[in-house]
Image (cartoon, rainbow, N blue to C red):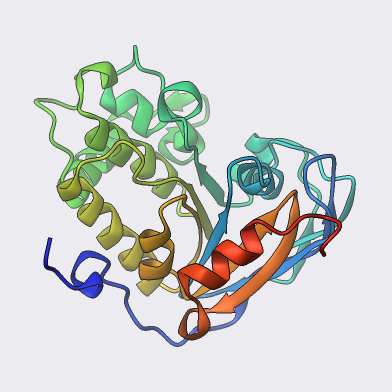
Amino acid sequence: AGRKLTDQFPRVEITPGKTILKVENLNNEYVSNINFEVRAGEVVGIAGLMGAGRSELAKTIYGHFKKESGKIILNGKELNHKSAQEGLLHRIAYVSEDRKGDGLLVDLSVRENMTLSSLNIISKGLIIDKKHENERVDSYIERINIKTPSKEQLIRNLSGGNQQKVAIAKALMIHPEVLILDEPTRGVDVGAKKEIYDLINEFKSQGKAVIMISSEMPEILGLSDRILVLSQGRVTGEFDIKDASQEAILKCAVETKEAI
């Protein structure tokens, strides 16, 4: 299109702060001996081929899959969460690659979907504070530029890009310490992609930690501060963005267990 990569992927330069998330020797049936950390104000991209274990790693950190051994440490405290619900309570948010299958309930409204994960925040006892709920939903619709006739519009009637922005808003509403984005721009038009990239940069600028899984090499190279490469459930490469290249990432992505 004749544009610079930096125009399409406006990565914000921030000096990383303290370690927010640390993963040590993490193992289960999907991943083997995973070690990495994510610091405040940092985007760690996870690259690899389909079936490399990227989503499985994310879901293990989030609590959807059980770890067999190893440690997941958040702000210096080891977590032993055994479900996605516990992961949310620890303020680890996961935006699924399958927004219609895992991320959203398409027969519910924008409002209902957006607040699904934060009902404990907007409720008083067992009763939802409707005023608080509507204020938060209206705020996120405006902030993220979700194009919908009304917050009561059914999710199924929105475009793919606006559905994805609702899924991200749902994650942000829990005020996460760690935001895990699994293929955040899959099936999204160019305009919505740019808005999602701006959201990632805004979250990063707040001193939070971002893990981004993407099959789009320009996206990984354009937004990440560091890149992990997975192959067959193992980390086969780690690059600072200054040293990363498409060729180096692809070489690590095709490594087999025998070559490791």
